[in-house]
Image (tube, rainbow, N blue to C red):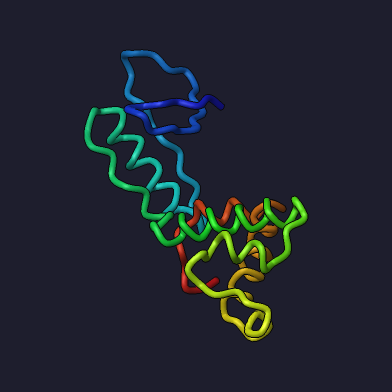
Length: 136
């Protein structure tokens, strides 16, 4: 397995018997991840032939932002920060006073971000590279 960078796009590729004469082929396993693999192959093809690489549809800007917030929440919690302190940094424009904190939607969101962030840290990060599916 090698990491190939084409036009700034990273790809993990396993190559066998490669030369400059024969065309490359791709082996695709047919399972629940087939569409994800085909997307990666399409993006690799665009990069190899100097075309504009289409954006990766597996990570929407919203999912990317939420993943960033989850990891920030995990880092803060592991450093000993309280949920309220984490919320103050993640959501600086929301009030986090003691009187309303217990029933606050910001509190619930912060707890969910920390919980889901721990799932990423424990190996769930692979889910980030899968297309959203309705059956999950």
